Image (tube, rainbow, N blue to C red; front, top):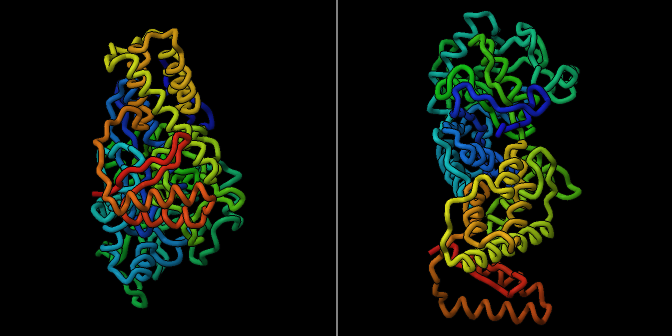
Length: 470
């Protein structure tokens, strides 16, 4: 079955043809670890994870690389302002290195709570400074760079005829006219970008390195090119990221990579759309008001209810976040788990090998092969589990295969947990408050239980709980 994916570069669905038959090299842009990842960020990682799992479903051998941006990401797309790591260090009164360590660990706690698979190679930018400097030297030798005194080494976009092909000519022209990035008087062209920034005498930087151009630090775009090429080769199969990376970050990755190697950087570019907050628009850390994955258990929701929620909308469509929608998704996930458990009971736990020629398996595969159509795949799982004309063992075998892609813990066996009497009393008090419609007190008790490590879920069959820590 042909696996079709939407390629942002060509603006159409294409049959995936890897560089090596049966194998796929994937680069996925990782977090900038100066703050918590918000749930909008994590929609992209859930989409990437489902894509990786779909490739595994179709039998591909994978190598997935993810970067950790712990230096060089400035607060402005115009290569001005402070490094976000320095901003985080000042905000928290810690070293930039400690901030990077803390938020890297926090990111992966959230990431794994959503059942996302670990990358095969994890690359902190600060471990690859030599590779970045070497790449800038190649670009300099080929005549693609110029220096702005007291500022940095810049890429001359006018020297690359097809600069901006990912975003499109009209978008790049809009940037040139000042639509997105403010002017830097030293640039030859408004869309030129920094490859290496110089440290100045006026600033105190915690992260800086010696280079042929003096002490400084890499431009944000440079890290992804250097690390992708090191681990996946000069041309890679697939590059993933959020839609906000198309116009600047990924456009500049393509420019510097292809100028350095003379080869296509990535054959396929894939991007997830934004998650937006109701009428308030795109979620943003710069606004200072955003939701993290920990917001879910604080409200009594299994984080996988958010994963399920993401699957209800195709990754290339904008997803609107509301707590009412998460509540509906949580109920849907509870129902799917209950249905899977019932089928497992009917099958008495025995599942033969899945019938890969069956109508339902082929339909599920076709949904995945159509640009990872998870809403369609999820609907087929529901339909198949409910279909009593299919023997229960076959339905169970199919659901187990589907679970490898969806990763919703449909069949997880959790040991019984003993609840201390003090916490049991709080749960009973909360139930009484709910019955009395004292929702303020109910919410206070939910928060108190969450602080003590107890996750509360209000389901159609009553209140459920589980311990989230020991």
